[in-house]
Image 1 (cartoon, rainbow, N blue to C red):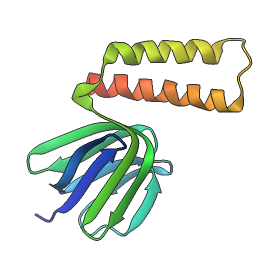
Image 2: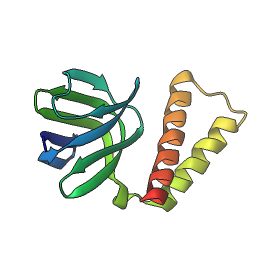
Image 3: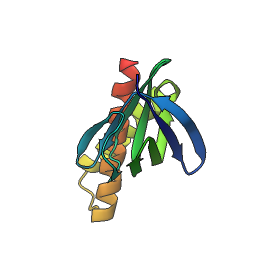
Image 4: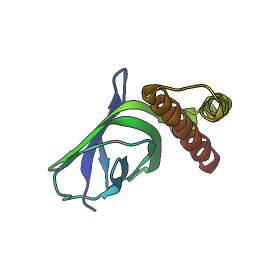
Length: 136
């Protein structure tokens, strides 16, 4: 079996360093990318979603939001603005964030475009966290 090495990190934590993987699914702003050994070189922006990698030890999944990924030769680097292991998701907090964002988005208050985008991201992230935690 052919492998490539992956690093997954956010600004405050290294989740994986030089982990051999045989497949990686990356949520990008242009859609999900399936990275296999010998993949073409790319740099792409991350979207909110589940990043899943397949190793010889099994499957590992993370919820990511924003950032970039780089595929170069036999090395993949994922630098996420936000990243957490599926098993570390606080479902109650995600449900509260979802309710809070939903209430503010459906309210009659005037939102600036920037605040609207923040709330929309909060809403989408909470949805992904809840769904991912339920599927683990």
